[in-house]
Each structure stands twice: as C-alpha cells, then as structure tokens.
Amino acid sequence: MRLAIDAMGGDNAPQAIVEGAMEAVAKIPELQITLIGNEQLIKQHLSDPSRIEILHTDEVITGEDEPVRAVRRKKNASMVLMTKEVKEGRADACISAGNTGALMSAGLFGVGRIPGISRPALSPTLPTADGKGFLLLDVGANVDAKAEHLLQYAIMGSIYTEKVRGIHNPTVGLLNVGTEDGKGNDLVKKAFALMQDAPIQFIGNVEARDLLTGAADIVVTDGFSGNVALKTIEGTALMMFSLLKETFMSSMKTKLAAAMVKGDLGALKSKLDYSEYGGAGLFGLAAPVIKAHGSSNGRAIYNAIKQACHMVEHQVTETIKETMESLDTGEE
Image (cartoon, rainbow, N blue to C red; front, side, top):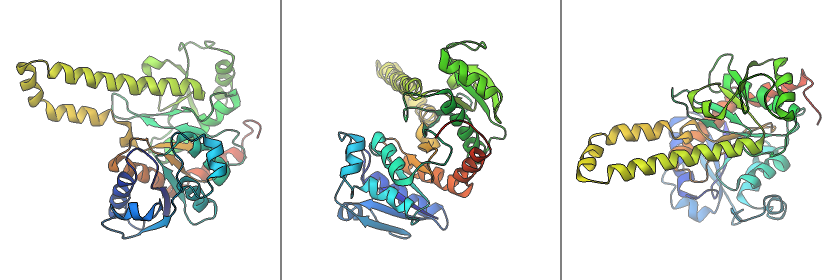
C-alpha cells in the first residue's frame, strides 16, 4: 500500500508531516509513503527514509489562495501533485493538512467522484463522553444541500463507521432543532422521510446539545450547519481548557492542586482531542482523501495515515460504490 501526502500543507509543515510519516512506516508493515513538497526542507526532518520517497516541487497552495483558482493555476503545487498520484494509480489514498477548500477542489478535479454520489462530504470523527466518538457529516464541503445529498451522507457514513471504526450496525441521527418527528425546515423533513426507508440504522432527529453524549454513531446535516456545530465544539473546548488553566494558576493553593491532577488533565485533554481519531475524510471521492487538521502535529498526521490505511484495507470506497449502484439516491 502506498499513500501520497502533501508535505507542505498545514501550520507545522513539513516537520509534523515528516514525523508522522516516519512513525507510520515504523509501525505499519508494508506501508510506503510518497511525500510531496520541497525536497531540501523535507530532508531536514527525515532521519529515516525507509519506505519513504520524495516527489520534489517548489509550488505550494497557501491558506490565502482562492481554492478553485489555485488548483487550476498551480499545476505543480504539492496538493495537486498528491491527487495526481492517486488518479494515475501510483498511490492508493492521499492526505493533506493544507487549505480545505483547495483539497476539496483538488479531490474533485484530480481524484473524481464515485458514480452515484452527487456531492462529497467532509467528515471528521469527534469525541464523546464515553470515548466512543461519532462521525459528523457534512462539516463544510457543501453549504447548500438537498435531501438526497443528506441520504447519501448517511449511507457513506454508515459504511465508513462499520468498516473502519468497527461499529456493527451503527446508528444514524439527523441534526435538528428537536427530536420529535416532523420538526425542522423543509430540507430536514424531506431527508427524514428518505432516511426512514434507507438501508441504515436511522434513529431519527438528534439535537446539538446531545452530540457529545453519543446520541448517535453518525450525525448527518448540511455543510453550513455542520461547520457551525464543529466550530462551536472546537471553541467551547478551547475556552474550557483556558478557563481551567486560569483557575489553576490563580493562587498557590490552586497551583498545588494543578500539580496533583496534571496527569488526569492531560488524559482529559487527549480524550477531547479529535485528532486522535484521524482526519476528516472527504467521502464520496473515487479514492480515500483525508483532510488532517491545519494545526496537526506528528501524532495527528500518524493517526490520519492510520485512518487512510484502514479505508484502503477495508475497501470503503469500493463498498460505497457498490451500495450506490444498488440504490437510487439522487441525481448526478
């Protein structure tokens, strides 16, 4: 198995990317990685080149670039060459921590969609109180969606959760303003009706306040609402730890208390860190494409690599394709 990785994407590139790649090849037998980016900068951090190749390029898509224009104009950008490796069969999957919009465009143009999937979905796994986690999709690939798109998200999310996360017959919830049947806007009502008849374990509507309690293994929504929910969860977690730090540093007594519970706080922070679950899969493309968090460290990149490997090993893309061929879930 070979993965192509954009070595120049993300806040901590290329160091974090290289560190994650080296950890991955050390722990995952038979894995080979192609790092794409500035060879000189990559080699500064590559202490063990075993099963790691470098495809050199000086061109990079930045966070300030307009996504579609950058993908079309920067033909030799590390992210564009990464998807080209997949399209031309030299890699089985790809990963980038770079510009999210550009990755979606590069994925669509370079890798292509699965037949029958109208819109891809960006899908992170987020933490829950019980440590199980849940898949949220879409979180921003498409801010406007139709009911048929939400149904496709539910089907793709169910396949991924069962095959990669190992949850048998995973439950699917529809994000709504209430749990009662008949709640919500026209989009959600139509999606609710479609999901009731779909080959998924649909449990009905779920509210945002119940997301982190594990109300469902998969929660489906449009990209606008999903992105708002994701950013709210991120912001709340950051604020909580900021307040905890402020409280523990407020006096000598609390500083002593902080020293006593330092290990427990670290474990709590790790439990709430969704990068431990990997990156956000761009579901619906013809091969696995993973968006790692922009601030990923080496550990987060390693987890994203593990996620991509599991998707390849368990043939998630192929299963989605076969499932869509047997269903009529919407237009191209």
